[in-house]
Length: 176
Image 1 (tube, rainbow, N blue to C red):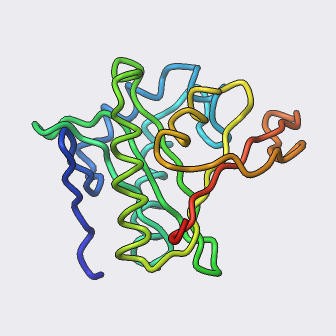
Image 2: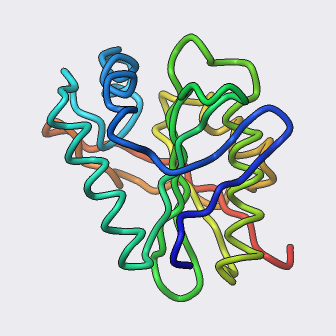
């Protein structure tokens, strides 16, 4: 794939991020909850963090190791992000975040289902997995609603701010 894909769902457009998206990314990720619920979003979140993230996202696409999609409404406004990143052996990891004003409206589930389908159909993956902190059960519900099944509890799997956290692992297989 030479050109970044665009995926359309019933309510969303999943597309590449642009530098014009940086102000909204920074605005959304100023909420401390993102740092508390994810393993890799710092707090406070700066313009430089967003620029670095977009640069990394572009590089993984160019290297054919991942896709980081902007989750947009049909008018093109960014609501959040969802990514799928190759972990070799025909498997990839799914990750996402959504601006707080858009929580509990099914947007991430809708985006996740589309990205999972993209991973199986377009990338030839056999397995897609995701993890979440135990103190973020809403993320586990998104995984379940996206068709993923609970696979394991990964003890002290994530180190953040000097502490170790357990993570729940969910996955979905191409052929069930």
